[in-house]
Image 1 (cartoon, rainbow, N blue to C red):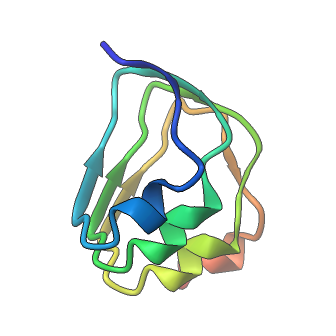
Image 2: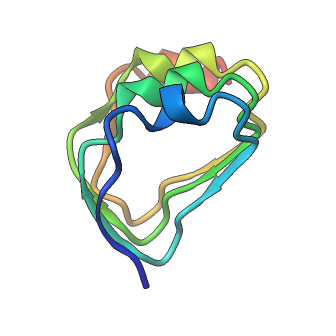
Length: 86
């Protein structure tokens, strides 16, 4: 099991990342907006973590995103229309 916070520059450091599968861990803090720069992401799994705050508009930049799982995470959508656009 992993714990801690995601690095704020994770999306800048891993722009070719296709899957981000961190479900079932103990991550907390905010989901970094830099993930919007990981433009090849197709799958994000943040289930069963303790992220806080809103999911920002950066999610709308992920045009290849097919799956996002955030159930039981404490993060919320800043604008539901952004999530629906995915």
